[in-house]
Length: 219
Image (cartoon, rainbow, N blue to C red):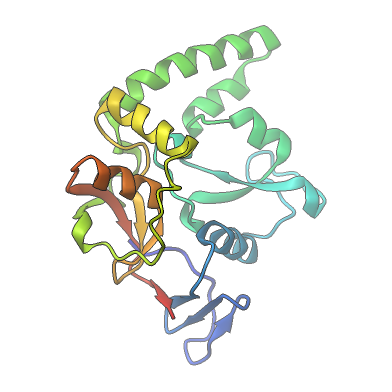
C-alpha cells in the first residue's frame, strides 16, 4: 500500500526530521528507527496537533493525541492513513471502537445508555475478532512467508514478555494474529517483531503483512 505523505515540490527533498526525508514520493527512514515515533511525527506534520478530528474543537498542543481510526485492536496500523489528531477526551471515549460504533455511542443521551453500549460493544469484540479478522483493513493486507522478511536485531530471547504472551493468547483463541506486520518496500521489518518471533517459534510459515511501497529504510 501507499502511505499518505505531505505534498511538496517533486524536484526538492522534504526533511521532516533527522530520521525522515521525502524525495520523489519516497519516504526514507534512517536506521535505527522507532517506527511509531516516526509515524506520529509524520502525522502531526501533515495533520497538525491542535484540532480534534472528532469534535472539531481546537486545543493546546499538549491536549491533542493521535487516534487510530481503525483501532489497533482490529489490526489498524500506525501510519498516517489511519491516524488522526484527537483530543484526549474523544480518544478516551472512543477507546477501541470502530467509527460507526463510536457515532452510535455519541448519539446516546444518558450516561447509563453509554455505559451499557460500551459493555455491549466489548462483548461484541469477540464475534468481530473471530469472524471478521482483518476485514476492516483487507485492502491493505497481504500474506508473506516469514523467510522473506528482513530483520536487523539481536535475538536473545528477551522478546518473550507480556506482549508475546498476549499474542500467544489471542492466536490460540482466534487462530489468526490481531495485527499485521509492517514492512518497507524491500521487506524490512518496521513493526511487529514480537509477532514475527512468535510465528518463528511456532512453525507458522506465513504471516499477514502491510507492505509500505513508498517507504524504505536506509543504513
